[in-house]
Image 1: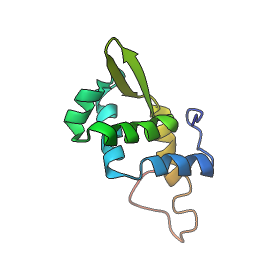
Image 2 (image 1 turned 180 degrees about the vertical axis):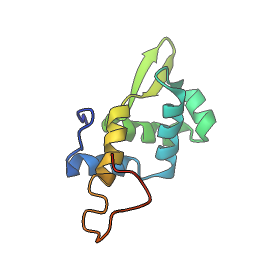
Image 3 (image 1 turned 30 degrees about the vertical axis):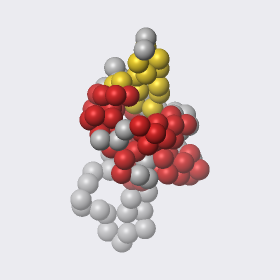
Amino acid sequence: MKIEANAIPPLTLAADSFAALGSEQRLSVLRCLVRAGPDGLSIGDLGERTGVTGSTLTHHLKLLTATGLVKQERRGRSTICAAVAYAEIEALAQFLLTECCADASAPCKDHDHD
């Protein structure tokens, strides 16, 4: 999935991305990679930090990679994983908020709509 920066994704792309994040473990993996920044983490470090290991971690990384939210790169003997789709993650959040309160009789008071 590739979403232009500041663009709201089409419904199908948003659905695929949200489906990839529809697991506590996958969401935990992505959040951990976002915290690690662009340098990413080795699969071993990622497993230790999230408690998700082995074939389960491999499965989750495959789904996150397929949607373009995570990339994997071989560095020597290690596989490094990194969250690379910060603009796409932001666009997914905007997807949810773009029409916030559009049908409400009064504007929302809980958040700003810049």
